[in-house]
Structure formats: structure tokens, C-alpha cells
Length: 270
Picture 1 (cartoon, rainbow, N blue to C red):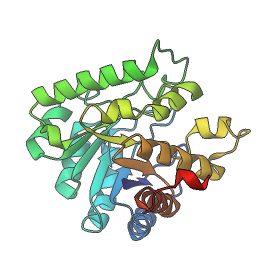
Picture 2: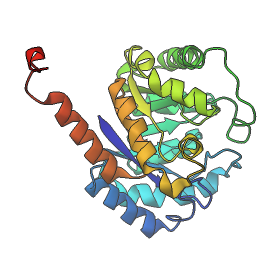
Picture 3: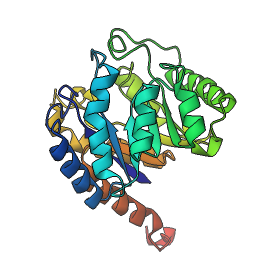
């Protein structure tokens, strides 16, 4: 399973807002994540935390393009954006993946940009918008409903000319979901991997982990993040998106080694 490292060039992201807002700090952070084993660096200039306000296109470009240019060649680059123009400029600067939390529904030009450039595309499920998604999320069957909407978005991507081999789907942990919704999605990741598409899961430091651990803040959710990543791995996910790359890479390597270990238990030994 691959690991996507998060590089937030924002002042207000839920976990590390402002920490890497300076371009040089963001570039150094990305380089460190690559050294720690990140297979992809996901660079974003607009927070999608619950309640987040939209960022003007010009400001988002100012934030992300110098960072992409500084990291191009270090590792494959993903641009985390909902704006087609930002995506196009990011691709010109070296990005090879577009991570769109609206699953191409936010900007009607996004599908054409992705199809025309041949980049990989992440289609994520979100209920509502970042400003409203956690107001009061309801589902009859969260796994079935998320999978159904993602299938519709995949069909739209197909019609737009995006190569199916380039499409990733993401159930959107924490994006319009309660704790129980998130747990159900993580338990049944196989429902998404069975769609014969690559699955990305982003549980890193999410609030459901804190709620399950007596209100632990973002800085103290690593154990829960690792547990969620390993659950995603067990369900067939192809990549996880995380802040803490080194410990997650280590956990995946050990889990892989255990799964591949030789030997067969002898029932006669009790």
C-alpha cells in the first residue's frame, strides 16, 4: 500500500494550519516526507476542514505553485484543489494527480482539465460542502450510499474522457460523517475496493479518533491514525493520506511482513 504525505500550505487547516504556510518551510516539509517514504506528496492551498471558508483562486495559486515547483522531481505531486484553473497551473508546474474533494462536481471545467492532461484523479465523497458537511449528516446505509455516489461520479469521469486506470475513489472519512459512519466505512473498505478501482483513504488525525479517545487533540491521534490505515489496508485500499508519514510507513511494512511470513500453524500442537 502506498502512502500520500500531506503538505498543507494554509493558515487554517484543522491539524497543521499555518505550520507550513511559508513556501520554504512547506518545501522542506515535503522533502522530509519524501525521505520518510511518502510515495506521493499532496499539496493543498485551501483548507477543507469543517466550517472552512473558500479561498480566492489567485491566493490559492500564490500558495501552492512555488511549492509544487520546489518539490517537482522529489516525489510525484498531487494538487489538492476544487478549482480547474488551479489544477491546470499545478499540472503545468509538475503535478501528476488532482485530488478533488468535490469529485469533479465543484468546477464544471475540472473534468476537462484532467482528461486533457491525462493526470490521475481522486474522486472523494463529501456530503454538502466543507462549511456545512458536519452540521447533521444522515444516511440510511452509509457504505451503500457513498459507494453509489462514487459510482455515479466515476461514470461522469468516464464520459468526460478520463482514463479509468487513472481514477481513484475516496470514501471521504470525516467529510459529512459521524463517528459511526467513519467506523462503518473503514470496516467495509472492501465494498470500495470491489468496485475495481484504486482506493485512497484519508483518516489522518481526524476528529473521530479524538472522540473515541476521550477528546484527544490532533497532536495525539497517531495511534488511531495507524489503526485506521491498517484497517484500510486490510480492506484492499491502495493508498492512505497522512500527516505522519514515517510511523505509518513503518506500520505498513511490519503488517506486510507479518502477512507474508512463512509457516503454517500445526493444530496438533494446541
